[in-house]
Image (tube, rainbow, N blue to C red; front, side, top):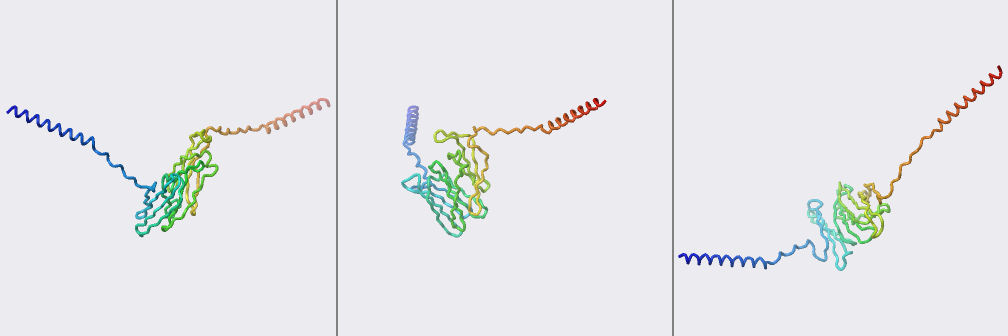
Length: 252
């Protein structure tokens, strides 16, 4: 009996070992999980969905083959309530960074703003702006940086919506080319919309180079001329009295 018992135990251990080895082998040869599917496929490079209001959705896409720096963009407007679908397209320079939605003029018509990163050294950021009224897209001309706003500009723009306005901020550099260095200052601009035209206001008080010496205040010395005039007049009066006194002495 004892012999049969030990034989049974050895057999159970052997079976357990075989099962363990089999499971380890299966785990070793298990195929990797399939890669996550991208939200867009060629020739599309970018996609973002904006839901402006219930039933009002905008799909923004960029597409093109053969070039990574040029292409086109699409704004697909879906009006689910009215069952209307419209398409707005245009040429795209650079690559889309982000897309924003706002109502800067508070007229109830949404504005779709597409931010693209360019490759030129003057305007690194480009904004493609449209206002949608009754399903129709009206193109808005986004202003370029002025001469003073461009001073020290080398890209690295950060756009965001704050209190219904488009805010743009970027660091300021000194020097040119490879010798350009950050000054630590930042320029902040606020864009609004009035009569379908953009307004620009600078929110920051900055300097293109913080290392520039500040103008020293001018100290104006107070003049003492009136006091001198009074003293001189007083002296003359004394001299006149002395002369008069001498004349009286001679008469005596």
